[in-house]
Image (cartoon, rainbow over all chains, first blue to last red; front, side):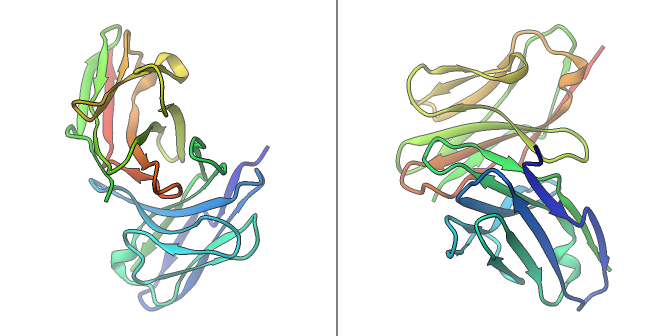
Length: 113
Length: 114
């Protein structure tokens, strides 16, 4: 019963490098999300995908791109990493319908030096 | 735009005492409200939700929350705190008109001591 799986768990990047954070869910959820968590700022929505084939910007999309590869997978890409993107990144998925609660992955701790 | 405020960065309480973690919200439509808990180095876990109906909702681990529409609040409560309740708690809201976007507060760290 995996739920939401994120890879990698930890990553250190140099400024300007690129990388993709992977997320997969096995609950047949339609909606998927990427959040970043920073001290004192809670969780801020980067991008979300309400259903397969659609993606939308959240609060803090600059510097990121996403791909909803299929219903299971939703990836987050940093094209040119910056120190301001040092954060903990969480992927989440949610049941279709207004009452569905979100399930979260374990997070990816990213450091950009 | 929807928003959530958690006015306390940290709440300290002695084991066995009641606890309250505060949350207020702002939405344009009817609110759907959630509480999540995060233990160190883990993702968020769902605790409870308010969608409609009874203003007092009960959730996991003995937690409950009271929805107050006039005060736009959704405070998390527990009658008797445990040391194991120490964690980071997040309140979240979704507007019934924005079915996908879930907005989180900044989080409140609960510290329960012996």
